[in-house]
Image 1: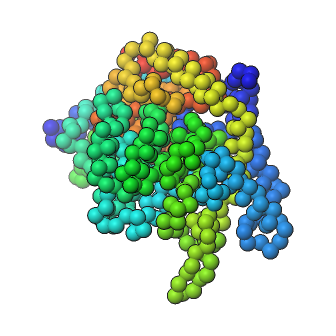
Image 2: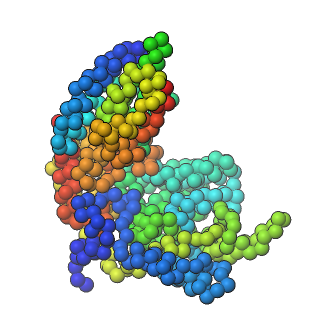
Length: 405
Length: 146
């Protein structure tokens, strides 16, 4: 296979042609979309638009076929055992909300425990809190070791308390650290827990194999996988999905409705109330088709090279405090400049057209543990170049100079 | 430290910012110099002691926090302010906001258009650039004082 040509890869993103002066390193927030995705969404609206699953006409049948084809492509990408194991949601947050709501009473009874980790972002904390508090379910949290890894010994000790559900992220959205998910799933299953993986940052790093990983649920957002915003996936094993009480009612999710009782449709429709984001699903499938034209190993190697260069450059800068480990890192570097506020660092980078995120990255419990007001986050994607790395380092050097003068 | 002391210390600094620093900020050509001045402005203001940063004084931005304290001298009908923020650039920009309204009467404050004034000073980009930086929220909080 020929080597990876980053310029050729980057050319497929019209965004960069419109913003040649910007260095975009906010990929953990959202990624840019290749032309193939933009085109697929556009064509759907221009040529194929109709509602799905309900029209009495051929146009609706065509739209339905495209929508279901998208589901099938995604199921195949995830190596799901059945196509109906892919539930479309608006994103990872919506999927986690469905899980937290849907597992109450069926799996979680008052007095039961669930297990989260200190690394989670708010979407994998707050939905559980909302429902656990109301139903008397206890939340335990896996702590971190001094080097900001998950404490796996503590994880096993907490599993011994018998949590009914264990939910953790594949990759930390703040630090970029890759969690040992296969090992964590195996341990949780051995303890008899339902397993949930938040793949928001993980899905772009590694094509997740559901049958190999063997987790009960895996969630992600399309826009962090080169796809559109407003579409995401709740993957669940058939038996696990059947445990879920639908969060939303209405539309295609019912079978029979009366004011006495309502019976629900079969999977996947039972969990997809209302008109779905049809164009979004088509766009996400297009993103996956497009991505599969490349060798993911090469994309990750390129990103690893960018990361190496970035760390190398950081080592020459004074006053930089790096929170992310370069080992087992998926392409995210969180750092601070001395005791300067991350918002100031980010604003000085913004002035130099370097896009990063600053703050607590929707992970307040993590920063409370780190005893920091936040951090500046540089997150890399395969379309970033060595020039991006060098320019961001120069901009950071200039920011440090202004701040510490 | 009491609010009276803080007000007494802050008032001349805000006056000084309005009389000298604003003009200097206007004259600077490159962004580096402008930002150096903005950060100096924040430093000039006396810091608010941690104990006085009560939750109800907090003006939330997405990324940083700021605190606004206000005193209305009812006899003279004049409004005075004290400010702190954990981010220096935001604090500098907020100091500019405050120096524009410092000592105003209720009627003056009510009709004062902060956005328009920022525009005149060529500072509008800082207001609109990031609604998350708390400047809009600060502008609303200041207006709510009258």
